[in-house]
Image (tube, rainbow, N blue to C red; front, side, top):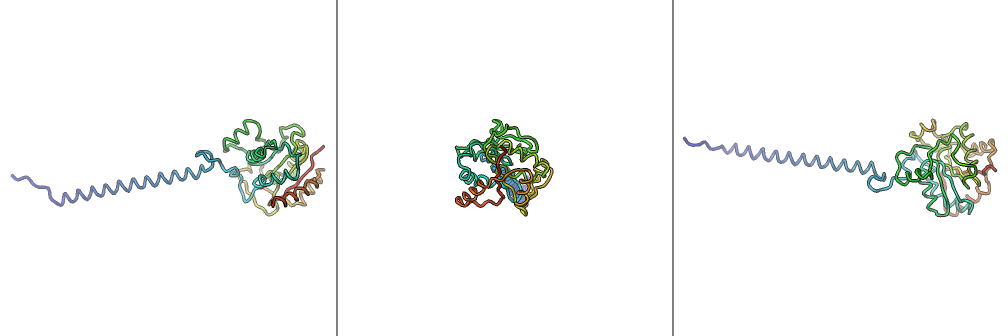
Length: 258
């Protein structure tokens, strides 16, 4: 009996299915590759500047909203130094991203600096953690007494916190700022109409930001027997013009209690 030969159609079908399977495998590998590339890009985007890939976290990434007075402080430091001269020796910054402000002050080389961070700082870079471990920056609720002796600092710079305090709590906080300062308090605060929604920080202060006018602040200072340092204010304005610094926030200069 003659052996039956495989039909040519059968051989063709085998080639077709082999080709189909080959294309299927190629498509699967392509989809998997694209998925992996997309996942890697998402990881890079999510951790951008967080230190996971060697880059430093954006120092102001936790400041949410349309603007931040703290963002202005690095640019304001040369102006403040010019206005206050050699009296600005050791400075305490009170406000969010205090690690960044303190680092900037320390980089000046002529100023010693410390900070009080009123918000949780779980997600920070190594440099900030080191400042906290050394006690240079502390995490503290500013509605309570500050952990420093009287006149521990020549100046106190405060930003992005008073707008979240009610007058009741400011009655306690401002005297504390005056107590720990020897030569003055510099306050950076928002203008009416400027919007900020630091949702993550509402749990700390329990209220949204309230922007107050210059006249409101001046009356508040007067009612609490806190004097504005007119000489420092004029020198600051002159220095701001000299350095072409135009703050978008209100800046108040107060005298310390003596």
